[in-house]
Length: 67
Ligand SMILES: [Zn+2]
Image (tube, rainbow, N blue to C red; front, side):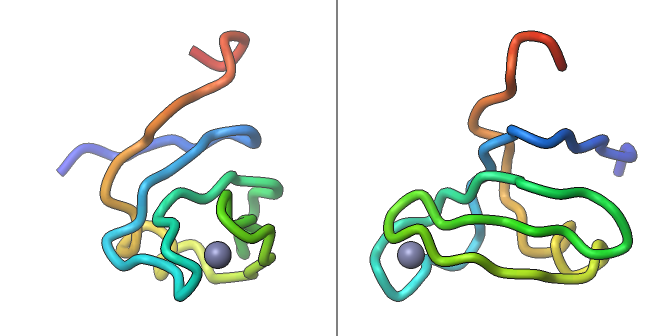
């Protein structure tokens, strides 16, 4: 599988839905840990990069300047 690069502002779809029903999260911070915010309820979650990469199903949208 190709290495995927992520950017702040990316909206990603997760394999598992959040309890609020949304499965889309916005990437707020990138590094060893990724800070993501649920699009449905605004819940913030910090997760290590490997865990984040495994949880992501696909990138839904990306800011034009990062395309
Ligand atoms: Zn949520």
